[in-house]
Image (cartoon, rainbow, N blue to C red; front, top):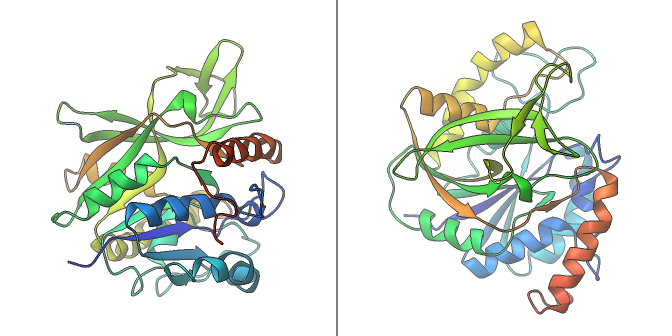
Length: 304
């Protein structure tokens, strides 16, 4: 069995943030958020990291991020490009938005060759979750026996706008029973709610609702499965939403659960999420990373 590897999805455009947030420093010595995640993964046992990026930022990303991490871990790169599509499909004219997290992982076919953890580049997840993921992925599991780290919704929202989260439910065995992607969750004076009709109506969510932050543990066969299922998504998206349709991991996992073709063990975290969905989020992230460094959780600099 190959040792688990870490996969970091870092090809986002940062349209709501106003720039390439995956390379915007938040640490005292120029560290970006993913530096802390990779550092936490390394001390949990991960020795290989795969960065999924796009060609347009490849040179800058390797110079500013990859070059310092490759001194401590094996670093691999995957390019997620709009035109990486199954045979017979082409990019709609004027589309610039990436195809989503499902395509990002599918782009890793041939590179992601071991049990793997998946994270977003612009989310800080906390320390303990990486240990849980590494321990789970280090044990033998059959194909389609996956895991995810679940967070409390109240620990994952921002006051500066909406967020997208996979709203989850567990069964009595601690496995994920269903997941529904909610792409516009917002805080307001009396709580947290979401809308599916651009604000015409809202549905309340309890603060302790279990949500996915795109922190998963998968077996390597998922990469080929995502590529095989991509055409079915494209057939629908090219008809209904050719400019913005996204092939999303939570939706694929949700369908596998519905069809009883996979199991997902829920690993729980009570850590507070920090992220830079919006530029106004940055100040809180900078303060949090500074406090964690001052408390001794991280060295300064992170990568000597």
